Image (cartoon, rainbow, N blue to C red; front, side, top):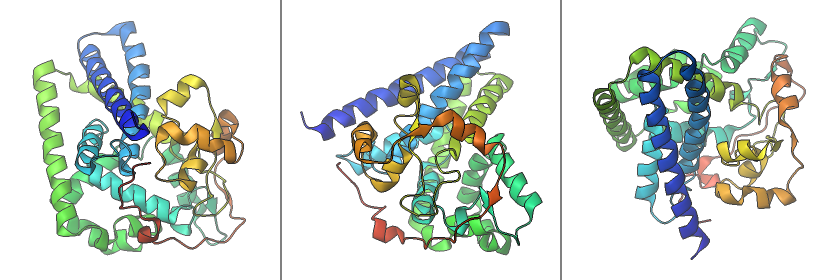
Length: 313
């Protein structure tokens, strides 16, 4: 059996396990109370990390290397559990790869002319989980009123101007986003109806997940060198966390080999920069942004990175 087929089968099994487990915890939390809610909340927050890792893999056409349509369907399923339109997230992630460590994505450093209050507020909003709930709302707004993002406030801000570049959202892409959002809403209506989910229990689970995801979201990039391809860290984590993150802690390897599938990252890491302590890097973030020591690198065109091509690596 080829590696491509074997990885595809592994990814399908992992996706079904993660999604069914998350749905099971949603039901459990909605029909129990007291001490049982604690392990449910913790478990859901970490399964959510795996679900995001699966969606991220789909962004690089790696959930199914033999069929782009199957890869899109699996990525869309993972997107429903975030919840977000997969295509919306896919575009944002590809923008990240082309603009990594440029001024457009400079959250951990500030220039002398920057407003420190804004920079620190922006940074800590990421760390404490305020940012993630905005993502589903942004996905929904892009589906129903994309013209809002073409307005001046979005088009002049450094970070949003590159994500909401109008050229990235032609009519075909907007149609796909709308399809994913509508199907996602139907998915959640069915879940709430069939499983009799409790809204507040579901909200608590997602607040825990969003905090867990958000506080880790920038850890592999914070204070790394300002280079589009090399501006990331490899982190040292436990074997259990490596499985939870689907080797996402090898982020420098991932940026150097954006189409390498998650199963191959540790092997590729043998020729990469040695991993640094996850916890030292994590707590370093809480000290806040620092003065910028380097100039901005030049962004790489997404076409040059071939980020819209399917890979079979």
